[in-house]
Amino acid sequence: MTFGLVLSTDGEAVACDDLRLGAKGQSHGRPMTVPRSFKRSGIKPPPFFLWDNSRYVLGLGRPAEGSEPRAYADRAAAFRDWHELLFDGTDDPGLLAARRFLRSWTPERFGLAPFSPALLDRTIVFRLVGDTDADGRPRFLHDRPAARAVWEPHASDGDRPEAVCLVSGCTAPTARLHPVIKGVSGARKTGASLVSFHQAAFTSHGKRQGDNAPVSEAAAFRYGAALNALLTPGSGATLRIGDTTTVFWADAAVHGEAAARQVEALVTAALRPTGPPDPVRDGSDQRQAGRSWGWLGVPSAAQAVGLGIDPGIRVHILGLAPNGPRLSVRFWQELTAGELLVRLRAHWDDLRLEPPAWKTPPSPAALLYALARQGRPETIPPQLAGELMRAILTGHRYPRSVLTAVLQRLRAGDPIDGPRAALCKAILQRDARLYRRRTTDPSTGPNKGVPVSLDRTESDQAYRLGRLFAVLENTQRAALGRLNASVRDRYYGAASATPASVFPGLLRTTTHHLAVLHRDRRTRRLAVWFEREIDEIMRDLDMSLPRQLPPAGQGRFAVGYYQQRHARKPAPESADPVPQPQE
Image (tube, rainbow, N blue to C red; front, side):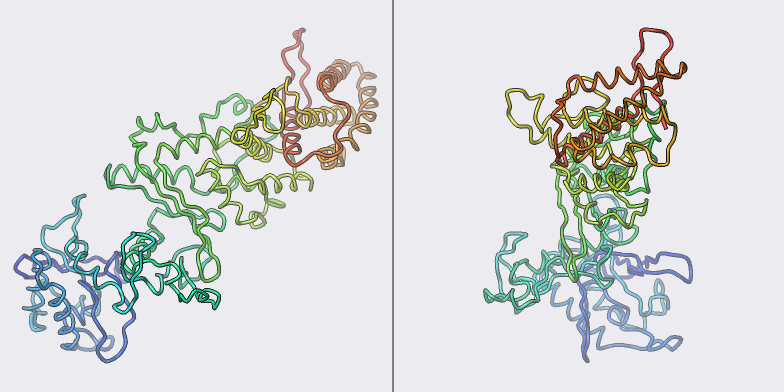
């Protein structure tokens, strides 16, 4: 909308609001939700309800740029007569003011204040002087409850069959075509439909187009207008995560708009996509390694109250992805702010790993940079972001495809760094928590938890094999120095997938590496430390090594490797500790 006429109760135009946005010369109309428009053609195109361009509202316009104003009496009469019909019997002061204005208006009054040539061929709405909404903002006539009640019976096609609306549950004329939704990343620029039927197979039950999913005209208009408003650039209610456009809003009906805005800001801060996270390199940042995960910055539900966030406010989060001419709903969550915080905290707790994998908190989308080939984000499967977001919001299992993708990167030779180990740990930890089986010994089996930091008492075979592989690699590095192809470079993929075929040979080779360390006086104590580490790991290791490890076992192998690789030697009996070598 570009201008708003302010009317007194007797129908006089007392002011004109300039609603345009942007710099002078490049201004454009303000986005606004108004009664539905439609394509107009023919000799007598119909008017819109309580808004239109100046040719209908004032009966004036310019046929061409720079030409003199021209009268459009037939269009002004159509606008006036249409509203006379709709306002018949109303007692609303705002609608009565609009009717009085239209009855008394003549183009000859255009030269008087508050009218100006800038209104010609611009869209115009109406406002009753002094009328405001619940938040004290100026309210336009089409937003008044009486105007909505007048318009809704006329919003549907008169010849449409009636059915029970799937949204409202009321019997009403159904929408033949659903509204076009614009602003979804990857979808058609002209927009795409959330509900659409245009194949012959959809007529098998004698129903065509929108009759297959009966939604009333009023409900279809409302959800279309709401989504298009939320997806408007600059709305602050949209995030793009992978191929999924996420729309969110908080319910302001109970706690007010200010409280809802605080919750929406929290959602933005927690879920906003960022670039690649800054990982802790090889666990060498001791300041980060000694810090707790409080730096993740997600408050608990109890802490949220102290920050002015009401945990009872309802939050709605919708994920939309393009699907040809349609839109697919990737996820839909309706929950309270407190429930959202609980699930976010659970997500971060599942990712918790020592030493920490990141220096700054990664967004959900940034977690997937660990899956990128050669560091190129375009190689990340786009659908994984939506699946991961759904798991975070619902508290359900993380997608197993993420674990598979991480293991593929490790077998391809990518480093076993903190982000990849944390993803493995999170997936397995959540599975253990949600799907723990009843056993006589809950500390064993595939559904037990995964240690946050190095656990020397952990008896899981895959975890211990990962630890053992890290010690064997460090032994080789200490004995031979840096090589073009280390034990990890040559054997990690096979060792994590088929341990029985790799570890016997690695242990034999390690015997020679330890002998090299023993021959040098400066490394003898280091050799003794390595031997003790190997003995401690193998003491509780079943020497009938598994021929194959399933994906879950390979994930535990990666976590054990990472934690052992970056562990420091416990305080020794002597005062002269020997550190484990690091890259």
